[in-house]
Length: 211
Image 1: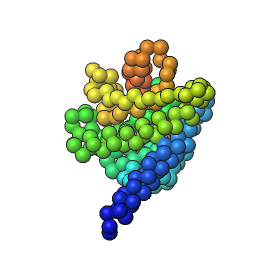
Image 2 (image 1 turned 45 degrees about the horizontal axis):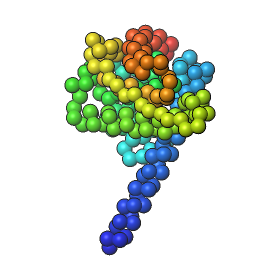
Image 3 (image 1 turned 90 degrees about the vertical axis):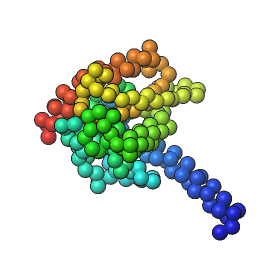
Image 4 (image 1 turned 120 degrees about the horizontal axis):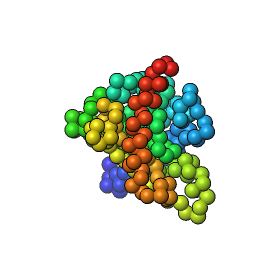
């Protein structure tokens, strides 16, 4: 293969990857129906099953399986994305529209107990999910999208241990799309995440009793 042809092939591959990434963001939001007036089985979100894949990150479809989250089981209906070692699922105690969780498939209490491969995989999936949420945030924040040029951001955080606010004994990353003015004080989001964590275990218990 000549160098010009090789360069053209690489450029074409990058272009297709970029297009797929944009489509993935749109697809992600379509599959996570975040409208707070809409409930599915009394959950905060309505989630439809996606069938979309790129590289090793898959927005799972009918082949999804239930996943353990600490001592609780997360229904396959709530899992919307997976990578080889991690999974992403809807949050039962969201702080903002689009607030989701990413966790390792192996039940691990503390971040320091993850393997290097699990750490890399966990953050890679969080990156993909965050990109999808941010790039399609106009669907999550319709009021903000009416402004001239709305800009969106992300908050990604881990509460590592009970003293840090962790209530579920399973490492997880909070991924939250953000818009200007969503909190009067920007650091208030962390207080809201703490409050949400405190109610998460009760919500998970309630969900378990329903099933």
